[in-house]
Each structure stands twice: as C-alpha cells, then as structure tokens.
Image 1 (cartoon, one colour):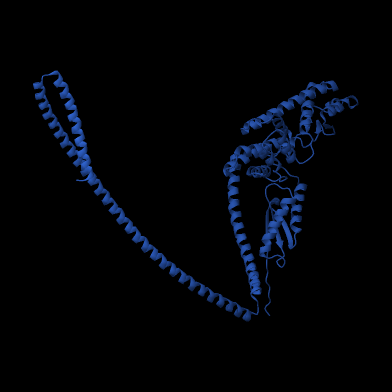
Image 2 (image 1 turned 180 degrees about the vertical axis):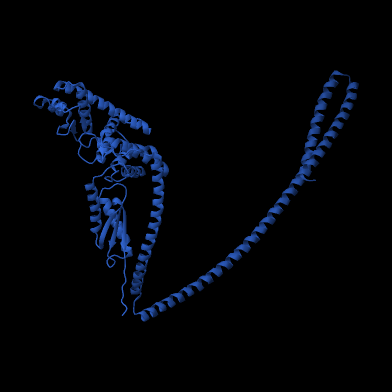
Length: 512
C-alpha cells in the first residue's frame, strides 16, 4: 500500500475516533439522567450505531482514496504521453537542423570553389584585355587615351547632329500641337465674346448754331474764352471752320467736361466768366458721376464685386480714354472676358484672370498725370489699393515689362493682344505701319548670313533668305529662334509674328 493509501486510512481512523468520542459524551450525559439499565441498553444501541457509522465512514474514505488514486494515475499517464510526444518532436527537429546544417556546409564549399574559379577567369580576362589593347595600340599607332578622345569627338559630332534633328522634330510637333490647341482656345473665346465694338473716333468738336456764337464764346477782349480755358484746362481752337469749335487736351476727362459745359453755355445763351464757372462745376460733377456709374457698371457686367472706390473711379475715367481709336474701358471689359474664357478652358483661376484683365490698363486713366509706363502705374495703384500680388503682377507684366508670375498673367497678355488685334478694334496710321514693317526687316537683316528679308501679311510674318554657304540647315533653326527673340525684345506689336528662315542650295554643273 502506498503513502497515499496510508494517509487515507489514518484520516478514516481519526474520523471514527472523533465520532466515537462524540457518541461517548452523548451516552455519558444520558446515563447520568437515566437509570443504569436504560443507560446500558442505550449505550449498546449507541455503540452499535457508532460502529455502523464508523464502518460507513471508513467505506466512504476508502472509495474516496481509490478515486483520488485513480485520478492521480490518469494524470501521470497523460503527462507521460505528452512528454513522449514533445521528446519525439524535438528529436525530429534536431535531425532536420542537422540535415540543413550539412546542406549549408556543402553549399558554402561549392560557393568557395566557384569564387576561386571566377577569380581565375577574371584574371584571364584582364590579361586578354590588356593584350588586346596593346595589339590595338600597335596596329592603330594611337594610345588608349588618344583613341578614346578621337572616338568621343566622333560620337559628340554625331550626337550633335542627332540632337539637332530630334530637337527640330520635337519642336515641330510641339509647335503644331500647341498652335492647334491655342487656336481652339482662342477661337472658342472669341466666338463666345462675339464683340461688335469697332474703332471709335474721339469727338473733340462742338457744333455751333451759327458763326455769331463764336464771337460770344470769345467775349469782349477774349475774356470768356480765357476763363473757359483756364477753368477747364482745355484749349479752344476757333478757326475758319464754319459752325465748329475744336477742343484740344491730352486729358480726356477735362475735354469731356469742357464739351458738356460749352454745349450748356450755348443752349443757355448767358456766357460770361461767372456763369462759365458755375456751368463747368456742374459739368465736372456730372462727369464724375458718369465715371462712377461707368466703373460700377463695368464691374457689375463682369460679376466683380468689392472693388475699392478709387479703382471704380479710375475705371470710369477709362470710358473717356481711347487707344488707337479703341475705347479703353470697352477694351478692358473685352480683355477680361477673353482672359476668363481662356482660363476656364485651361483650368486656371477664372476670377483672377477676369479681374486682372479688367484692370490691366488701369494706369492709362492717369498716365497723362504720372510719369512712367501705364502698366507700372496701374500695378502701383492696384498694390496701393490692397489688391492681391497675383493681380498686381498680371497688370505689371501684360506688356512684358515685368516677369509673369502666373498663368493668369500670360492669359491677360494674350487677351489684351487679341482684343487690340482683332479686325476693326483699332486704327493705325500708314506712317506707323510702315515704320513697324521697316523695323521688323531691319532686325532680321542685322544677323550675319541673312541675304534679304520680307515682311508679309501686314507684318504678321517675316520671311528671311539666308546665304547657304554661311548658314547650314541646323544653323537656320537656331537663326530663326534668335531673330524671334530679338523681335520680342526690341519691337512692340499686337499678336504674334511668324519668323520663317529659307535656305536654298543650288548645284550647277556643265556638260562639255
């Protein structure tokens, strides 16, 4: 019997002893209160009961001990089986690792052998290469460095020819694709604008009801005409032209004030210095009100809101300003619409393009009062009024007097050229046209190798004939690019000018 069974028996005996002790105490108490006979009988009964209880407890303890022993044996068997399985797995892993280690050792030996063979092969190749180089040097009479330099020169010459050809093909393809896309965008924009505005003629004359009115306007001793000229800042030219007075001034607003005031004086009939001053004051207020209304209307038509009051007023002044006969305010509105439409086609900022297009000629409103180019003047006004730097840059750069900082600035420049160059928009004197054509031909003739040049299509294209013995085919490409750049830098022109360089090679031989 094992230690566990002995322990169980000891526990059972202790339990039986405790039960006997309890029953003995109970019997003792009963014997004291009862008679000896009854006590004896009860003692026997109790003793028998105690024996029975002790036997039951002993049996229960034995069964419990047997159960615990069986469970312990089962657990020991289970653990033994698990340890066996783990030991088997470890053995399998150990065998697998040993196999891998053997394979790795074998592979390492093969790699070392291969490296030794490769090193030997490399040494053989190096020796053969050196022998080959030496043989080539003996045959060619050149060293390796000299041969390399000669080869590089030949490769460089061929590469230059190939590069020029590739550049020409790429430029031609890009130019064709870009011109096609640009035509589509510009055509779409112009069609959607559909402007019917043609060249305006600035009216600087006032019609009189009769020649007698000239004397009344001049006044006694010329006091009326002096007062009118002094107050308005406009020169009145009264000559032999019947029933007409000419107004002369570089300021279109002053000229408009003088025209309105003179018409009202003629209708009123009361012409004297005091009356002239009052009429001119009212005419000035009326012109100021008209300028504000024109500026507000222009912004409203384009859907532009929140412009400063000073800019609104200067926009209104452009209503009385013309450029080559084209009304500057109408030109600005047209430029804004063209720029916005092209920006929408290209995915640029439509609102910025529209605002910059409207304000691009803002400087022309005060260019008679402030020195400098109107683009720089307009940009300074826009900056002073707190407009974004992007808009300021587009205004300053629309004549390439500043570097263009955004695609909207490029679109404003293109829209300005389209609006000014479309048929009927502006008029140009014959003298200025001839000067522009001659200047274009002089720029082309200033380059070496040019034989003659001809400006065609009203100065929109120049064709240049070059001397074939001085300019080759690839040089003609470079010459066309150089002439185009010089034209951009030295001339002012609407739209664009196409530069075409023509090189002709003639081969002549005589049969004898």
